[in-house]
Image 1: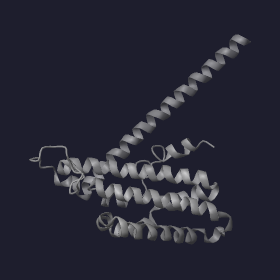
Image 2 (image 1 turned 30 degrees about the horizontal axis):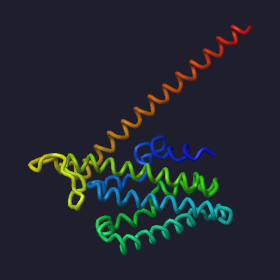
Image 3 (image 1 turned 90 degrees about the vertical axis):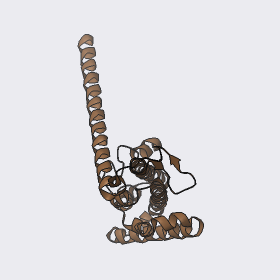
Image 4 (image 1 turned 135 degrees about the vertical axis):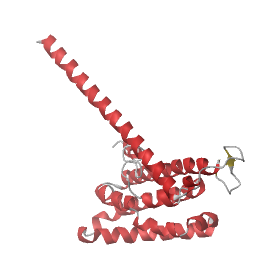
Length: 224
């Protein structure tokens, strides 16, 4: 099994936000700053990877008729552990994300990967799938946050000791970028860009296939 192929699908081909348009609630709510987006992205990465592993381990013992309640229970348990860890060791992250951490339980992408992939594959492929989808989600969140925070405030990681000033301090960015409408604009543009790239890749693949068929036909003609 090609684990790299499984992993990279979550980065582009099946990116949870830009390609599948799943779990858009946190993409709108917590991407006003890179700090919040990174905290949420890493939390979801941990949850989806751990959930895929657990589901893959117990899949043979779960009655298909009650699989969804079982999935939700597993996800809720993992999310509770993540919340307790953040509250104990990373209180700043916990304070900023607050209620949105609890909402991870109902993120569609986590339940979808358990149903579509982890229930049908072994532990290692399921873990790689979780890492790939989680990484794709985290990267998308951070990418959106970078655009919004830079255009809205002129800096990255504002309010932290790692703050980086991008534009001059006199910069007065458009307020809309750090509000929900700004998130809609950025996500919409990114989804459009990803669709254009995918369309271009599909056309290139079709062109290569056509060229290969033509070359094969020519070779057979010469052989005949």
